[in-house]
Length: 354
Ligand SMILES: *Cc1c(COP(=O)(O)O)cnc(C)c1O
Image 1 (tube, rainbow, N blue to C red):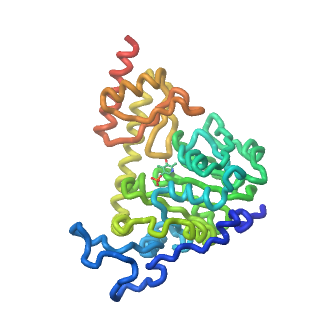
Image 2: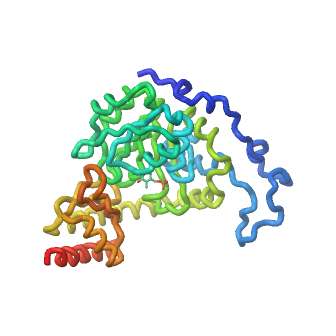
Image 3: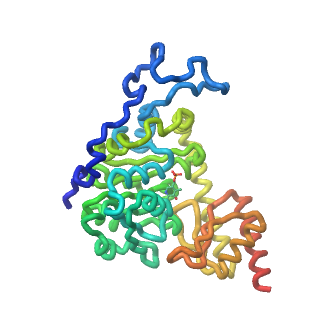
């Protein structure tokens, strides 16, 4: 494979001079700061939020680097993974000309972001066991195909994608391969970040929204070659990660033990929920999951979805999605929540049957 990042990049992006913020031009901590039009008296809140945050989040990246074994220069932080997805489109895909490959059923943001950027999506559905159809994928690739999005473990099916197939695509495809690992912490395989040095076209996404329990803070990570990360840094909004988020996550990282305990508990609950659901005679299938949710097939999924809402239990209705007909996607909850769900399902089905 011949991969050339610069020829992939949209030409006008290559030429852009990034905005240099006040904090770019002077990054020292000591002094009288009269350069950024901040409020010198402090904030309206008890905590001080009056100074702009570090635009490159170096302290935070240094700590993330230690837990992910990736050099800080190979880490991009975004306002959620969604920001990295959008920036990739803007950097590499010419509106109305280029295309990307999506592998449904998969995470919906790739398609929305493509549409916002007026970029064509070519779709190659996963196989019935939710694996990559590698030959069909390469049949769709053309000279304007810039990105292939692979989600593993996949949302909404929950399975991990065959590693050898992903490696094959990384070797053969001359564009960027995104491996979205939002659910990596619930999975029993190592991250694709271990392959970063082999593949200049690899970009791995992870997030603090799931296992870390920090969805509200909005912090997504992208790991890739230094050159690719530099491109994302160049086009991102200067202060894309708030100081509050940077400080809070920096503190949280000192508490990896708690995250690991929560993950262990969620995995236990996943096994419990899987067993309980499988015991319900009306459930047709509980798909094996390497994530913190289960895809569950049942008759009259739409009706069940509505009836659950009436009992104030909200799950995700995926029954209109390819290969997920009659399926609901259910996040693993606490023991109490899971028990409540199971008994609600029993009620719903006894009503439907009568
Ligand atoms: C939840 C999820 C994300 C996370 O998005 P954030 O913007 O970081 O909250 C990314 N990808 C997939 C597949 C997800 O399910």
